[in-house]
Length: 367
Ligand code: MUC
Ligand code: MG
Image 1 (tube, rainbow, N blue to C red):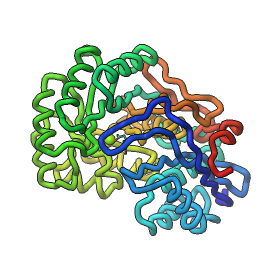
Image 2 (spheres, protein in one colour; image 1 turned 90 degrees about the vertical axis):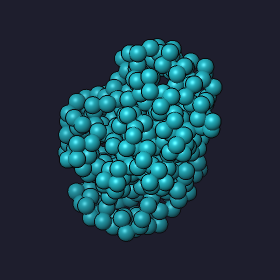
Image 3 (cartoon, rainbow, N blue to C red; image 1 turned 30 degrees about the vertical axis):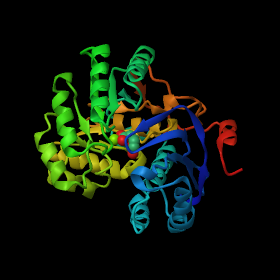
Image 4 (cartoon, helix red, strand yellow; image 1 turned 90 degrees about the horizontal axis):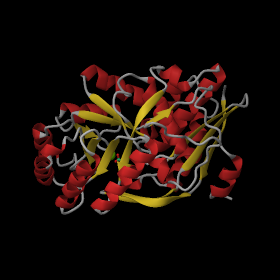
């Protein structure tokens, strides 16, 4: 099971419509397909999404760090030596999605070698997750129309609403319009991607107090340390740290510093190995987690649901597993389907990622 070869393949698939949020916007899934090949002929697969506005990574930097730094460090190790793989990769700081994709590809190899599904190897709690859909910036009527279409088509009844625009009153009006149109039975929470100040956030939360929001995520920057703590202390709902708490140590810092009271776990940035560390840390501290979305394609989404469904605490809340619906196409031979508001894991060995060679040939950018 020695790691014999690693591929980092750039591909780009257009979106039907761009996803816009306070820290950036996405028009195409310009991701990197990561394939780890063993000397025995197994191939582990995952994808790395470049999010320069969140982690500083680009498609080019992901490929470069994998080909020039990580591959030479880990070729020859086996998929059973993940701790050594991470020790070597962590000599390079940052680059979370490149490291995460390699980690998940190794788990895929382990599952295939053992003839077992990765979800079972991680914990095997359940076979599906309820899905939460992320609604990006648009005029309020368009956000309502999107949420209604997603609810009516896929049975999804949980929505994460992007906020953080200026003036903040546009976002408050959009949330109010969503609540009025969707009714009390739908779950709504908000994510500001650091777009508001702490005082704007406090005012907005006050104005939305009657909307029954369940979480508030990264409304203002965690780097505004005292202002953020002031905000979180008075927040009437759990305050999720997403981009401010990626690594386990950052999770500790934000939680103990009073800058967050819940955590978003994204396998796109912490893979399975470090995501388990974050999850267990949150369980030990009694902190709720939500499975977040790195604006993943179907490969990344399958990784998220595999992890989220594997554990009791990561499957309690709906997982953000539907952004691939905005893509015009994807790479999987058998596309993911959301039915009755839920997404199922794949039952076969490994992660169950089977890449359609024709689609890869069409969308890869290195040929
Ligand atoms: C999210 O939860 O913030 C947007 C930026 C990013 O890093 O992730 C997405 C979704
Ligand atoms: Mg977020």
